[in-house]
Amino acid sequence: MALVLHTYKGNKGAYKALIAAEYAGVKIEESSNFQMGVTNKSPEFLKMNPIGKVPVLETPQGPIFESNAITRYVSRVNGDIPLNGSSLIDYAHIEQWIDFASLEIDANMLRWFAPRMGYAPFSAPAEEAAIAGLKRGLDALNTHLASNTYLVGHSVTLADIVTICNLNLGFATVMTKSFTSEFPHVERYFWTMVNQPNFKKVIGDAKQTQAVPPVPSKKAAQPAKPKEEPKKPAPAAEAPKFAEEEEAPKPKAKNPLDLLPPSPMVLDEWKRLYSNTKSNFREVAIKGFWDMYDPEGYSLWFCDYKYNDENMVSFVTLNKVGGFLQRMDLARKYAFGKMLICGSEAPFKVKGLWLFRGPEIPKFIMDEVYDMELYEWTKVDISDEAQKERVSQMIEDAEPFEGEALLDAKCFK
Image 1: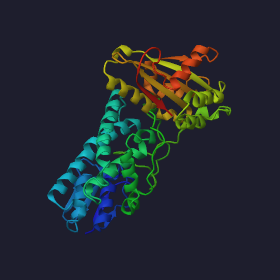
Image 2: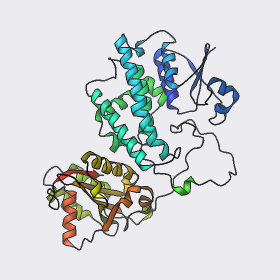
Image 3: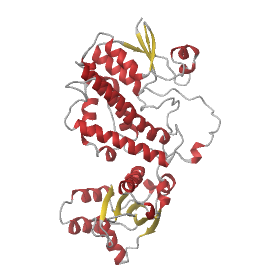
Image 4: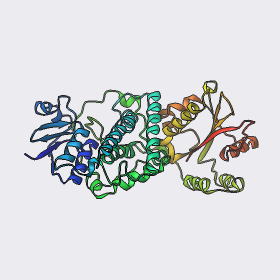
């Protein structure tokens, strides 16, 4: 009997086993007629896995479920190979990183991803906790990879396979470049590994998402109208799915901001100028900003956090601002922002400056980013020289700012 893997296309758990099979020289057949939500609820499937999850591997000795267990089995079908290490301590370290990738990376990433995709209820505090946990895990991974090409030893092991498959879903769905750039060694590791022939043969061309999916609106969460036609099975090239996803996401509607009249201010040109100016910032970047600024096509806004008296712990305040900027990813094409955390001691004050496409704060941002209501928003009057100077000082991180030291300054670009 051949080894048969029951799964849907794009399942990261199945990727682990299939990549291990490539390294181990093991042939695995994938079930050709598997349909998520149908096949895995059949009596025959439930005999193999009573809770109906995938993947499941059929073997001559009986079925195996849970992706890490399947991957370990596949790696040993033809005897022990380097995927399992060359010593007892290697084996222990491989198991260590497999657990780490599952508990610190995958679990937190799914807690962020699933509500964004509508597979679980959205909770802003829960998302903040998930992102903070994921960053903690990625920071530890980044530190290890600063002096290591692979997680264990000097070649690919099961630890790398499991970790990369977990990271791949994150890169494809919620972990944007602005998020992962904090972890350069993780980025280097990920792109090196996914371009290895055995990884690429299974995963294909890995891609990084451009934006975090918006929080599903309350309207979208209401019961849908009765279906008129049955849904077609998702194509093989579909992006990775989560758990028991059964329907492909609907195409996004055109953003109203894309329909505005063209503006002589090109936002990306300003962002490049800001990023590339390393000296004479006031004379080059600030002057360039005001030369570019188009008050007809864009608007400037000050924001002040309403609850500064709660900002008693520095790292909590910084995480709060970081979470806000992360949730603003959906506006990256249409906005530029500076967030200043002011004060040398608690309570810390959070103040911001935002440039938005259009004459008002875009409605989709107000609807989707819950943090917006935590701030007082004031439109900048550029005819007021004092307000215009305040804009300039916030862009250049002037210190002291309004009589206070800067704890930190964060840029959204």
